[in-house]
Structures are given as structure tokens and as C-alpha cells.
Image 1: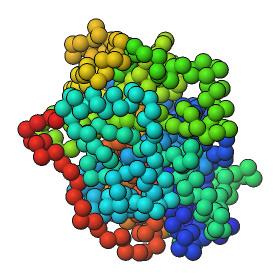
Image 2: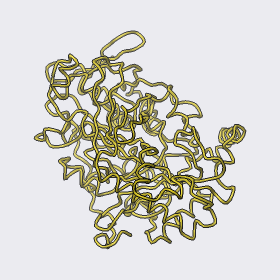
Image 3: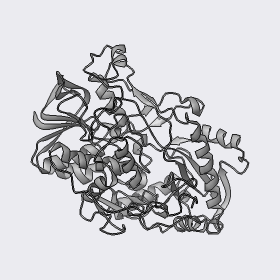
Image 4: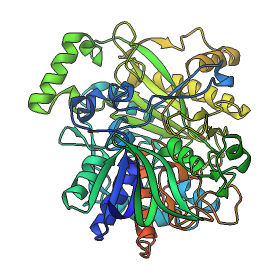
Length: 549
């Protein structure tokens, strides 16, 4: 099988690249270990807790015991399916803040400032309900919609934020992220609008994109040039050749693993596993970042939450209604209102995110509060803690060693306590008084710093936003893995384009910036000039130096 480009991973960035490369007439082979995304567990938005807990669709990765979280082992879901993690995620659509990308550029990702990436965000999306064409895209492959907010709890949460003195934003993906407002989602015509639905399937229909199912074992190198990918398939081990380039888009966990298996990474670590060193790149697998969050839960005064659908018959009714009419609770991911706020004065853009949910339940759907309730997911967005992804062995079938090192920086604890106290203040506003019966979690008895820390240690969960393990930077930076055109430094014919190249985690959920990376990388791969930079400026709270809100 001959292809101009071989892409490893049919996830958010990989699908976008396949689409754009095929659109330009190039032949593309996409290697994906997972199978079909057909079926209601993936396509029904309301079923979002199911696919990330099914071995059919999820890699089943876990962290090592996290030292600062009492030795807990946390799940690290990654999509093992067409569409990758965009087929198992919560469908929340957040670009990130303009300052995130300006920070990337300051860290050495030249050409990736907000002015540079905004045109790609606009190119990729069809915005339904956003603030208008100035900041939003009208004709891209990725449909972005808003929920109906028919449950009064959604608007009550936004109003509570306003009453607490925070801004209300019409469109957090537009000019102003800061504030309370409606959430956006990759949902279209009541279906999950994954990267597979938006990009890969249309690209395959054109005949220039082909899928190879199998486990990518290593990049095949001739000296310092990548020439193909060794793949374990049902027929045994074979090599998929690339006429022009190999592009890794296998996630922030599996991309560094594949680089290491291919001899690209810290030399001493490669020697430990008997892997010949092709390039000593100390940054491979380092700089692992994530968002950690807690669920602040309240018992509800009124029986208006999703708890009424939680038994077997309620879930069956929701599924049947969606299947036959495309409507009802199953047509929404139920994340329909949100907030981005600053934790204190002197911070120029938001560093706390809220997801509001009209049920009190664990993200994996395995534990629900007894009775009607609701919750806010809250956590700091720019933790200073850093972790790593390393090899467990030289066997490609073995999962990597994942250490996020959560809560290892002392600032994390102060930031989390602030999150909890600000949340309680928001839910104490008049708008929530008809709804809040009592606090379930942490519980009204948890007040002191020590009590809050104990709650965080026991209950903090990943928001499933890993990134940064093959970070982008200047070629002179010894910890950078790829240059600003996504080329692996010191290699030929090899690029990385997925969330692993993020120098720093962005504000919010990572699907949107991952797709943007695929869009922009495609232009670099094709040797095209980047889209013209934008001259639009984001809204920054004019009182940020002296006021928290």
C-alpha cells in the first residue's frame, strides 16, 4: 500500500489533517487501532458516560499511584475508535483563551499566537448560535451548537454568577471568554459530531484516504529519516510506507510512547529498555499536564433534575425517544451552561472553569447521589504541576507509565481551596435559593483549609485533558520536541500534530484546540503559507489588576 502521508491516529487532529491533505489531492493512510464508531453509545450525546468506560472504545489507561492524592490510581481515558477521543468525550467545545496562544508563542511556538490560530478556528467550524462571523466560522466541517437550556437550573446558574458580580458572556468562544454563559458542544442534528463525522468520513468518501486497522509499533527510520510505520495487524507485522512523511497524532499518551519505541527520546531511558537511540530528545514524554477538578454537589428542592431518568426504565425511555425522534434528554450532553472566572485580582484572564450539570453524579456514571441533585465541576486551569509518560518496557503492547504528579506544586492546594469557596458563594445567591436544599459534597462541615485539602485529596478527578508531552518550541530549545511547523527536531519526514505538542494546557476542554492543531499542521505539511493573521483583540477585564470580578 502506497501513500504520500501516513497518519498514526484517527483522532481529533488526525481526522482534520486527513481531510485537508486529501482535499489537496494527496493520498493518505490513517492507522487506527480501534474500530467503528457506529452505534448509540457513541452517537447519542446523552450516553456520553458509556463509551469512555467500554474497553471496545477506550484504551483503558491508568496512572501510577498519585503520591499527592493519597496514592489513588486515576483513569486516563483515551479513544480507541474511529474519531479517537472526540468519539468518547463530553462533546464540550472550548477554543481556549486568546492569552493561551499568546503564551505558546512566548514559549517558542512562533506563529501560534492568537492572531495566528484564530483564522484556523474560524476555518474549521460552523457556528450555530455564536456571536457572529467576526470571531466565529460559518462554513467549516465541524458543527458547533448550543443546548436548549430548557431545564431552569441552567439559567439559574448563569443568573447566580451575575448576582455574585461576575460578567455574563454571550459567547465564550468569541471575543470574551470571561464570565457565565451558555456552553457549546460538538453536537449536530442530535448526534455526536466527532472529528470522524466532520472530517474523516467525508475524506474517505473522496477516495484519497484509507484506514489500516492495527497497533502502530514504531516509526521505521532510515538514518534520521522516517519512511514508514511498523504495524501489528490481524495478518501479522507489516510496514506501511510513506512517500513523503509520517505524522504522529496518537494522543498525548501514545504519541510520546511511539516516539520512544522508535528511538527518539531521552537516551538514558531508551538504553534502559534496549532501544537504539536515533535522537536524544529529553523532552519526549516530559511536560505532561492536565486539568484536575472536583464535583461540588447539592441536593435539589425541586424534582427537576435528570435523576428522574436514572433507573433502568428512565434510561430506556431516553434512549428510545432519541432513537426514534432525535429529541429529549438523549439529544444533549447536558453540559449547557458554564463559567470562566478569575481566582483573584492581578490575573488578567480566567484560571477557573465551571461545568454545570443538572444531576449529582460521577463522570463515569457509576455513582449518583440518592435523590434529585445537581453539581458544578470546578478546578484551576493552569496548574504548575508537571508529569511524564515513559515506557514500561520495549514491548509496544504494554501500556506506558503515566505519572501526572497531580497537586505536586504547593500553589495547587491554595487554588483548589479558592475554587471551592468561590463555588459556595455562587450557589448561595438568590437565583439558586429555590433550588438548593443542602450541600452534598464536600458537605457543610468541611470548612477549614485542612478539611478542604482532605476532600480534594480524596475526591479530585481528572477532567481528561492530558497534553504537552512532545511540546512545540524553537529548535534551539533542548526540551522542545517539535518545531513551530510540527517537525520533530533533528528528524526528516516526521511530524507530530496533536495535543502532545501544546507547550501549555489551554483554558478549557482540549478537543477544539486539538482539531485546530490538525488544521494548521496540514498547511505546514503542504508547504502553504499560513492563513493571514487576524487583527481582532480579545476582551480582557479592564479592572483585572485590582478586582477579582
